[in-house]
Image (cartoon, rainbow, N blue to C red; front, side, top):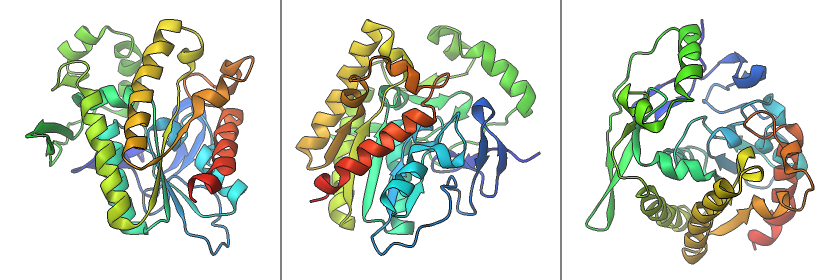
Length: 293
């Protein structure tokens, strides 16, 4: 049986090239030969390509290939868009993935999307049984740790899914006790790491002569629980402020979603639905020309 994600010594896990089959939420997923989510046929455009990187919100969990926001952005702009999002990534893995793909594809624009939880994931060396790379700060410099990433043996997919349904609802203490997650930094330190990573993105923008846009997205609980929303906004805004100070363009999707009477209607179970992804793609299509000037 073909697996959706495979081990990677640098990033921890990556989409399995050539995979085609059901993904999270029963949606159909196709991974191309280069390990990118399929966006539909490449448009005939003379403009430079747009690389998108991020977590499951960028990858497009719970929607089919051409329903993710990168796929819909490709249709709206007529430009070639590469979906380099990966389910479960922390902000550290997102930046490492961007560095890897910018060298391979030489895009003219990179959209780096994140949710606040990606910042917290930088405090971990393991998430959902999967080992991952992580960064320490030594002498005010980021130092990559945990590479090559140890390949942790995984249970058969059906057993893994059953266990995940149980473990995902446990308290963080119990999750760490059983090895589901593994912490390497104190709680809250991830924001400092994320801000350092934003400065690393700014250097990549300069080194590769590429325009980088940092975009904040939000999970559905943002529109249900006030305390949760306040924390999401605090973390996201701190990263966006750092991006602005570092010379990067930003997009905050909260403002657009907050104009809707029922923002929850733009979500499936835990990710954006087709309508929600179209909103994100439309927002980007409308704002990118101004951001790229």
